[in-house]
Length: 164
Image (cartoon, rainbow, N blue to C red; front, side, top):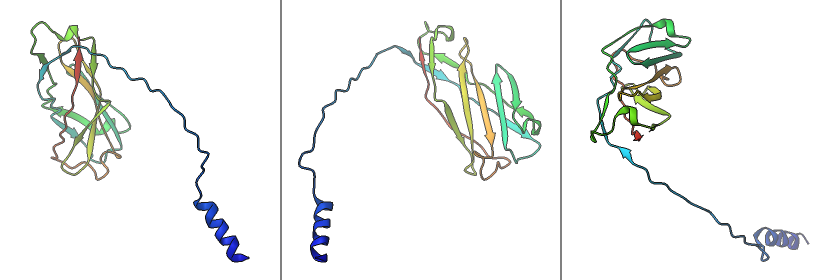
């Protein structure tokens, strides 16, 4: 009896449903074509960030024009930036200017990776009417899990599209 019970249990587990139903779904797809301006941009150099302590848990540096503002729990550890140079974009088509850009498509965040495998995040990227980029550089204990090391270089890049 036990043998037949086991055989029937195995048969039930391995059986497939012969009355399976199938359904058909329609998926729509679409695309749009738009002109984007080709630009040459200089390197966005945040320079040397001077801190009173390398143990950062929450620090954001925001730039608009040449004004840099520190916010976050560790804002008091920020003293200065030396050698800051914003990225300036110029279009290869002389008829396009920063003022004509109707939409700038950029990533939500860009990782700048350092020598110690810690990162900084570049966020809130915008461009003014003259083609100068601004944004926020974030440092914290999540990104700098192994700590920020004095003299480390942080580098990254991103692709942006300017629609006019």
